[in-house]
Length: 181
Image 1 (cartoon, helix red, strand yellow):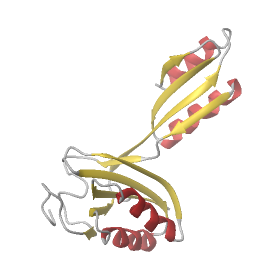
Image 2 (cartoon, rainbow, N blue to C red):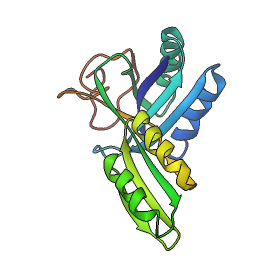
Image 3 (tube, rainbow, N blue to C red):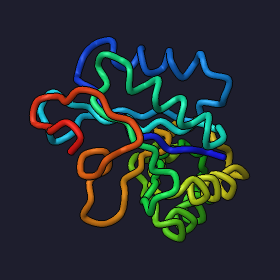
């Protein structure tokens, strides 16, 4: 089963490599790892998706929580959440196929972000299945290149993942975050 862990870390050069190193040493599949800034200065948010059983995900979360830069870890796998991937897909096109490709892009609610004489770059955001579906219908035209972000996830509702309820794993607090809040 895929587990989605939300990891809050202090901004620093080594935080990403430390988290990746802990994931690498465990005997399960690291499906994706995304990281970005938060609205709190000095704090970054990672979304780590791993293929593991519940106990394995719990052990990974506990190990991540012990890292020096980690502020908080929460497994949101079994909570209502919105999960999205972003993909950019460069597709070969001829003047004859351009209209067909653009129709497919509209059906998937994606958008063309670059047009060249012999290719288009399509941007899509959605579930992994939606991105996979768009990729499948574009393959016959010739996918020249593709990049995906990996999953990002956020709990539904007004609660804030990792910051408003007692999580399974906690560490010391970063500036602006109450411990155990």
